[in-house]
Image (cartoon, rainbow, N blue to C red; front, side):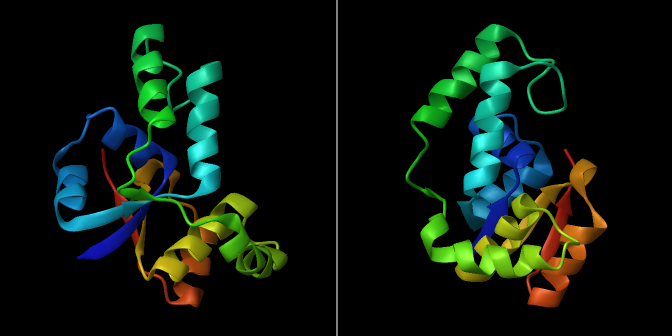
Length: 143
């Protein structure tokens, strides 16, 4: 079975059971993973919910439900430990064309031999080119 690293938007949709056809196909045919920083950013959005694209428009009840899922993240969703990929994250981020968040996503996908899947609204040239340079398959997923 193939693996995919999901960004925080896609992880949110999987955990909230709010999957469209595109995300549903990913879940059916792949092992799922995410990163430490995507996970933390989603947690921060659930706790703070000050607006924004992740959970800003969600009701408090819906955010609490997602928070419970985040606290009890299924073991089937992998998160590579930073101690394993941290040095590679630093190497990727050193060039300055990609954030630490993006560098971790590329390093995680590289480490897991996975595709990096991002919500099409978060598609950025820096992470796309870093993935390409690292030989990581980069896919945008519509909601």
